Image: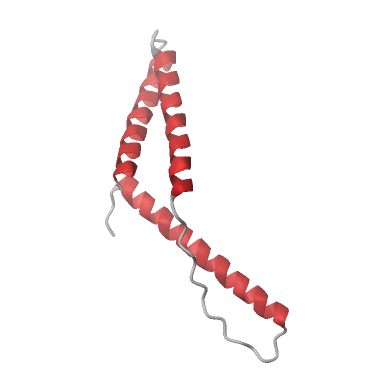
Length: 110
């Protein structure tokens, strides 16, 4: 997505400004505090934008894993197993999404 590239680029530049500002602050340069403040404000703004971008993305319905009916099980245990399967699928999708974002950040190919 083009928006992700723009946000990642802006975040990288802001991080560079923060590192530069921290160095300048350690060296007691006049502009150190200003550079650090600007970088942190830009990064904070980017995090707010990321929050809105993630909120606008449509969630894909999680495909529930089929649960084999057990004749001796109670209805409550079947419902619990189905809820557990839904949660596991949701967690798996989250892990896959996180891995995708990390691959973009670190530009790795697996």
